[in-house]
Image 1 (cartoon, one colour):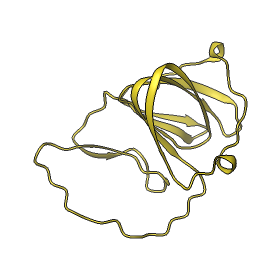
Image 2 (cartoon, helix red, strand yellow; image 1 turned 180 degrees about the horizontal axis):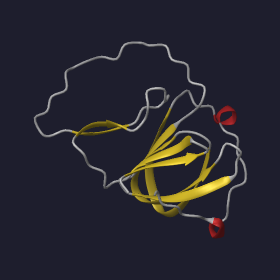
Image 3 (tube, rainbow, N blue to C red; image 1 turned 180 degrees about the vertical axis):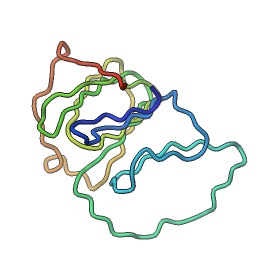
Length: 146
């Protein structure tokens, strides 16, 4: 499974880096135009990264993308198209990382979960989210790539 790209109508809804993914070097799973960049990095002991600072570059973000790091537990992620219609679901476990890139998503905690969320700010919930009814547990569809 390692890296999954969840799509709807040719648009990436989410990218999952599963805990079992491992390759040496730097692997960006996002393209440069994403407002949230996500990469897997694996370097050997002794590797040095040249010191640097990030310079101020003005960017315009028109859509919030978020990344979840699952530290503990199991989380079901339900994916929805931009039309709010249910697409499919995945289960994330400890060590998995997901970039929620576009469209809609909902969650059900299957086992007590601890996770870290990263997204652009400033975050204003009443302006950043449009909530809508989700599916029930008996409507879940798990798809696999291929």
